[in-house]
Image: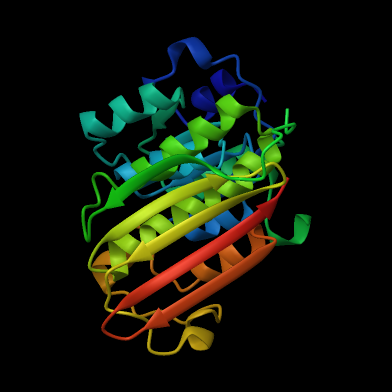
Length: 118
Length: 146
């Protein structure tokens, strides 16, 4: 699924990544526990999270994630957006909750990734 | 790519890690990842090494009094070394168990401290050594074969 489609489905606001909406995303992982993300999310995974701190972007950079969605309208500081720019990782916010975002994307065919994949 | 004729290592990068400085946490690992990428390490190995380094760096930020994270590159392997100035781990075997954590709620709210950092490192590394002395410090050496 193109990132553009994902963004439309969750009624997202793009904080960085207008040029990267063509990116293909096949899998998603929803978590507020970044060690879980590091352990189980595969490269190019979409991360949905309720965290809006610098470590979310660092985690995405380290684990080669495809994009970040910050759920339930959390304020994302400029320093976090700047780091996402440096790392070339799209970052999007949605006013919808984690459950809604995950549900909408799952319904439209985005796959999960997790410990059972390996 | 890995045809270095000498068996001696090359220091890729060494970064000081400050205790509880979350804004800068991960910078050292980011540098290590970029350096290894330039050398030509493939994406899967690179990802494993970067995860080891980042978890180890976060451990230094969260649990130690400060230290340094470094990466040594050899013809056949990469070593990630995290060395701190204390306080040391009382029981290393226990710390290696999934779910064991001494992190505070503040740390958990940031997305860390669930007690899966060291097990994550172990999963990504081919060989892991952790040596710790209370009051002195901890040295973690994780090896990934190329």
